[in-house]
Length: 176
Image (tube, rainbow, N blue to C red):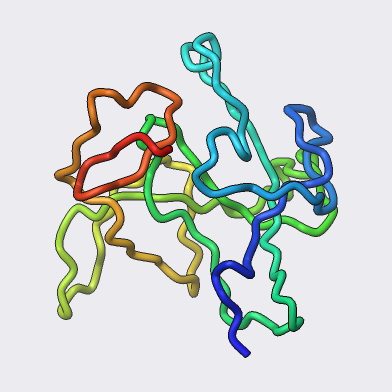
């Protein structure tokens, strides 16, 4: 049997908050793709001005009805934030909480960047401008290159800060 994309769900952790106890075991609520504020809450004007860092834990859940195993599954961010935010991923355990992300045991954080030159068959290096200087490239790991973000894109005039958007024919438009 084949596992379909619809069999893979992202689930929130049992405790979702801005406290050091944020995280823990897998909860039931689904993180819905394209739904506004499904994982992170709305950012207020005061938070935007001052800068805010929020952590959220989510679980990749294989919910195939035939209990088939998914092999070779990888999770990555494909495009930088269109709102000037900075999103990063790191791995966690089944039970850890936000306070477990101490400096001494800090996991590697992965994020997004933009290619600064075309890649050819003869390329021996890839110049990338990263979204943040805290993102790491561990040896032996994969680099995911996506065509979902290009340098000649525009944003519709009716898109406001905090809107959910999608790329349609090279233009970021409001999602419904």
